[in-house]
Image (cartoon, rainbow, N blue to C red; front, side, top):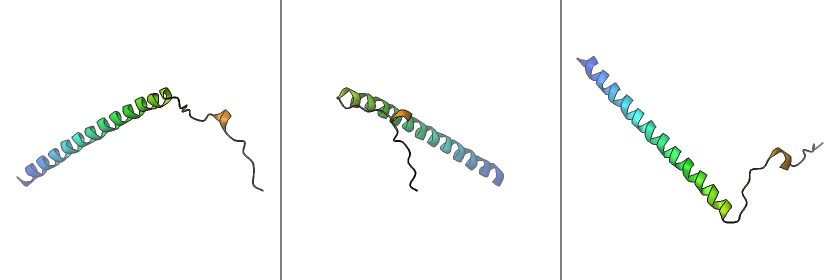
Length: 64
């Protein structure tokens, strides 16, 4: 009888964790969409936002 209740408790904990993970994944997806569309708005406002490329990097000099 004890094992039956233990199995039920573990089952409930599993599904609670599964729902919690789903909530975190949805919130992360919504946050990424917000950042994605916010970047578009920044470019429309006149400020240029670009990631530095390999050609933009400063030349490396040794400190010896």
